[in-house]
Image (cartoon, rainbow, N blue to C red; front, top):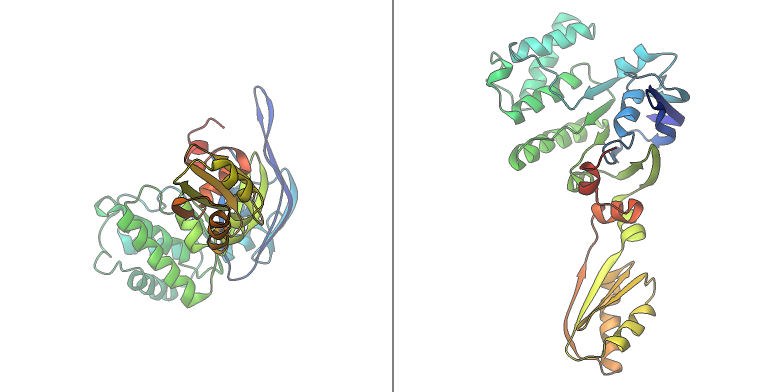
Length: 320
């Protein structure tokens, strides 16, 4: 559904040219839900704008939904839906009229546009709001309207650019319930950017991480967490045998990082839950008394920290 090779984009500034994206290559298969992560200034938004034909690349190529972004941008736009960060609906227009206007912009037959608008209103639980104007809608209702606008022409590929930013937890969950239901019913491909890592972790089959204009990771959330972050085993000690415990920890399969305190030992491994019983058995064999033991599963923020030296939350607050 997306096949990009060596996409690059630079901008002219008073201080000289700035490379926002440096040779981006990626593939997204039909039906996938892919999360695209990165800090502010990483080139994430610029990449999405190139893939959606809103910004021409400086070099490189991409096929999106079967059309070349440079040679056939109109073909791309006919086949994709795009829900940007800001609301796409007018503040003083009726909800159903906005959908019909979007249908007209996509050159849909008026009768088809009416049927599609009514179906989306029902599907996204906007029934009863058809004649309400934008200023009277809640944040969650506005975002569901934005999704409806992006889906009016039944695209095969939907770009969601931080769709739930600014929503309260209930509205976020409600929005995702509707998006995932639509995906199950239509098999639509979704390309998601988000700052909410739990969304990427639970929703996406694949996660891509971008930093400094380049793609630095691309895999399933589970493999990224296992390979780049790892599980953290923490053993609380009832005696002062930290040195013995640390030596055993270093000899565990896939042991990466061992930290020793006065009454604890921590070790990062690939599969913590599987290794914990064996680790405890070995500690007992050498006479180390254990006060507590636990395994902490990694998060995608741990992955980002391992890749860049920053958590994603820290990166969002940094200057690009």
